[in-house]
Image 1 (cartoon, chains in turn orange, brown):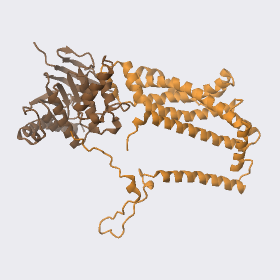
Image 2: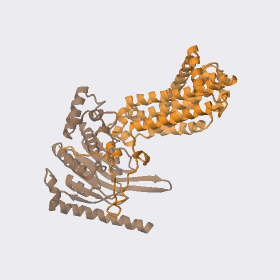
Image 3: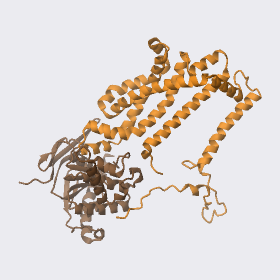
Length: 299
Length: 265
């Protein structure tokens, strides 16, 4: 049978967006023909990839320029705000001495372990809480309550419990991410259409099979996204733990730098942390597209 | 004595909502014979989807029972296939994978599953799209795969809950023709819920009209049009007459509904 032409895609192709013909509003207003605003300045408009890249890079460039100007004209004292090149030189120096790679390695290891422990616990629990009302009643209010306790307030307690070694870092990362993850994953699971579950029922599947073969795969793309978001938070908690009590790691280096007024190290490390976070996020995004590319609607 | 294939006896369904209890169905009864195609029509909110859901075993009735071949149904089961209005294809599986999903856990070998899936996709004219993901399929194609999935495990009864409700008018018409021709080749008992009167008359052997909430059966209209049904019958005076009869009956309900809204407002 013939396939009905059903592409409901009503958005005009991008090619026509830039070279859009001028629209005139009838003969009376004929002389005042209006040019449409560039698409990127309209709500819901479009932008080309290169335009996006240029604008984004310009903002970074502008801020860097401001930084260069502020330091070269000494609007701010160098001891408070060192120049970009000073920061760069210091980072190169730390890299040559091996401190930089040690710090990164130690911190990344800590975050991976802490994050994996939290995720390994949060995924099954979050799915259960999202799937069964019993587990929701038992755990959701509790998790919601703990979630509002500031992680920072747990730092002294974790030091008393676990000392200042890596266990305490994992504990802080766990407290900071696990409870949030459970709620996010619960939500991912609840978003699976009930009709999916009903299809399983009409096929004679038992609840456990529905959980394993329908609920989990259907929620998986959302769960992965929740992982990606919570990994970003985990960085914050790691650095916090390292700032307060540690003898190694990126956060520890920042605290010692503060004692010696090495603002160049501090700023360099803060930028490095931002960069690491960004890289991890992009890797997660890329993996997500590899695993769950099917979930993306073609536009 | 032989039983009708599907018997719905005195169904009552109440939904507690806060202080009030809403009665969706009250004394709804009907029966479907072997290989009969019956449509259930009514105003929106009359409980026709609730009824279908109870027949599928997805909801428990407050009172009354559903019998298949004379035996009460204990819950959902593979003797009744269901097609929903919403798109229920699993996005992580291909069209073929979705049909095969319905055949798993039944002791059917992988090769046979594959062949059965392809056979059923062919039945709905989608064998070329066997490897396509649901996101690559249009709305009508998704519902055709859902139909293939529901037919693949050979249920005795097919339950369809406004399966074409989300489709545009042209696609819907094509789907009606497709469903009719599939059903004419592979007969089975079908309970079809819709609010589209023309659709109901065109594809059914019998149209059952429900009252407003609490829903029960108001009237039924036998559709004595010959089979195979073809598209040109839509313009025929016989169909037109039946259409008017069903529409008039529903209109009464709609007007009653409006009046009662006006009174309570």
